[in-house]
Length: 176
Image 1 (cartoon, rainbow, N blue to C red):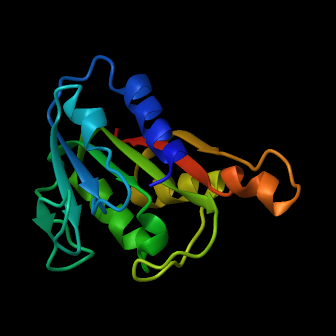
Image 2 (cartoon, rainbow, N blue to C red):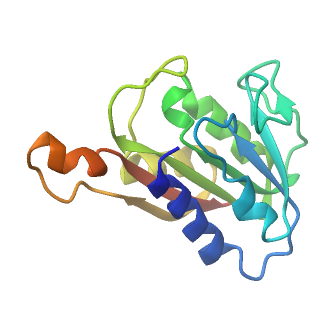
């Protein structure tokens, strides 16, 4: 996980969780590869549950079917996913499952790359933009509260761009 992704999730939590009673946060695609969002939420009193398709660091629930979350409809007050959607072949099915488990007035935070090099875990299929997030929200029956992209600041020699290689699209959604 790159530092800007962690900072974006921290910003989403600071912006949208004020006034929300801490409950359980479900992190979809939680396998820790270079970092975890767990401290952001546990430090705010949330019970963190990491969900992934394989066992490993930061994974509490291993999925039998990658497109079926073992949770009740409308049961989750907070669902997050960061740096996972580019690795999900049929991400729209995962988004639909996230929407299904999200409670009315619950929040969904999503961070996925808008740019960056290919990095297979085990595949690297997609990059995302704000219009894509708004389309997902519409398709999944959610309201997009935010959909922004970290655009590359400037082009230049490779060594000057290296720190700016990754950019993300950041979204916050709710169910009404």
